[in-house]
Length: 148
Image 1 (cartoon, one colour):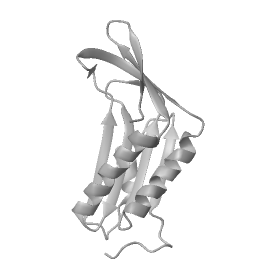
Image 2: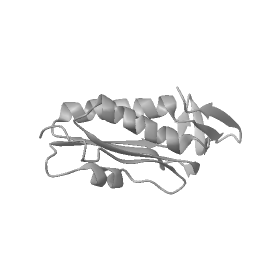
Image 3: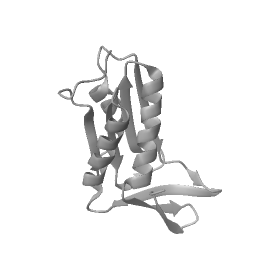
Image 4: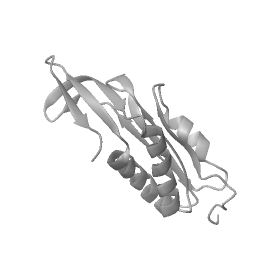
């Protein structure tokens, strides 16, 4: 497959939402019969952080987060013109096992899809103005910037 044309949408989803998110939905948005690779990523709430037990997280977003999400997606599309991509970052209260970040990238070839997906996740973490409060199993909590 040649690189998608300017008329073909390459950013299918770039959102910040309070709704449950699904990696499969992102994959379904980007995949076509022309693709040899669909790479997905699920950022899942884990039960520990730095040796401490985690019960839940609460994500908060700056009001500019949706616009920044669109900018991040557009930047990845520019850097990787041979792919289509979709991602969703959840905000609000999440528990262990919930998906906080879902991403999918499709391309004719796996190397391009893997590279673009890794770049996408890294840029989301770097630029999206979202912060998380970790709720530990000992009753304490801690705010952590998702940026960086």
